[in-house]
Image 1: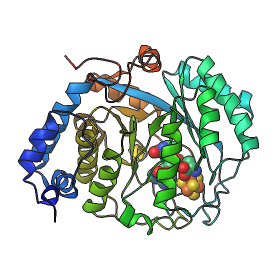
Image 2 (image 1 turned 180 degrees about the vertical axis):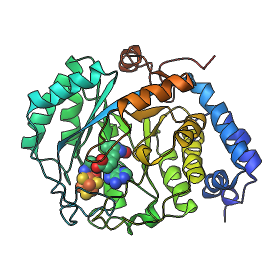
Image 3 (image 1 turned 60 degrees about the vertical axis):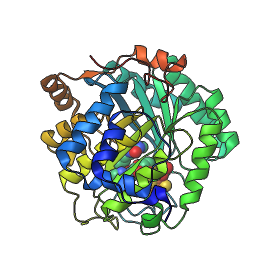
Image 4 (image 1 turned 90 degrees about the vertical axis):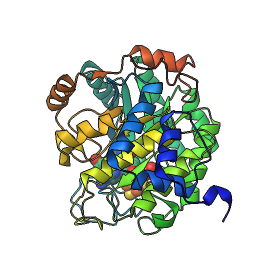
Length: 359
Ligand code: SAM
Ligand code: DTB
Ligand code: SF4
């Protein structure tokens, strides 16, 4: 055991992490200490780190659209879109560009600043990518940030999307390397890291996180976040999804994660990647407003907004507007989009994505 692997007292880990300095040398013990720390100490440290980089009352708002639905050859055990499971989902071919842009425009009018296009592919064909590149250009022309999640991409594909002006590419590691094989067998953990490297090398912002509630243990959650935090550059956006259980998928009926453990995962992500946006992602429909509030307190500062995720429900837009109002949360301003594009938004710049510390 090296010195770095010695068990750490949670207090020293929290004190250091609360300073909000991005680090890439997290030990397994340090990451696990966050999951064992007293909850109040953990959330206090996470909120402290959060305020070093962000306005604590501002939340980034993205809207998702499934641009190609179902019939996926992969076997991700959580996913309603895998062709291997009978989930009753209606499959849909790749949408026309004009329909996608009409939805992007509607999302913008409702207040979203980022539009995320998701497709149920193992990896996109170059022919499909031609059409997706047009969608990316169109979303950008609307003045929104664009994000795509299309499965595995090679360097050339990532370059094409970067040239079209794509802002973010989402590709999740989903869970820890150890637990990964229990969830997905059709592509490896290393395949995912390779796609992330292609996306990063093409100059795109990386959106990468995972799912909580798939039967994993705390240690797996800690290890998943450690993999992300120890990347050379932290993902600019870290979605933490709570499993949405869908009848017909192998994970339907899994013991749901306790809300406190979910909030812990958000707090740990905030502490381990303090300058990144942490997204309280899928699963909010099954979450109380009190749990969501704790997530914001623990440092979540991004959500999916709009009545639908990809194929499952999301809280109604009206409810989210009411929740924001009750909490005094403002959607992150459109100007931040331009600031990030001009390069002030490097997640590891001294004062974080595009702005100074909170008041
Ligand atoms: N097919 C592409 C891929 O796998 O990269 C893109 C779309 S896929 C639906 C994007 C991510 O959504 C997955 O990696 C997973 O983290 C998340 N996801 C899918 N189904 C989910 C579910 N039932 N509950 C929570 N998250 C889910
Ligand atoms: C992410 O981490 N979560 C989003 C997005 N990235 C693509 C997807 C959630 C999907 C939830 C299940 C569904 O609606 O199909
Ligand atoms: Fe396919 Fe993506 Fe669903 Fe896996 S998560 S089955 S790759 S759509």
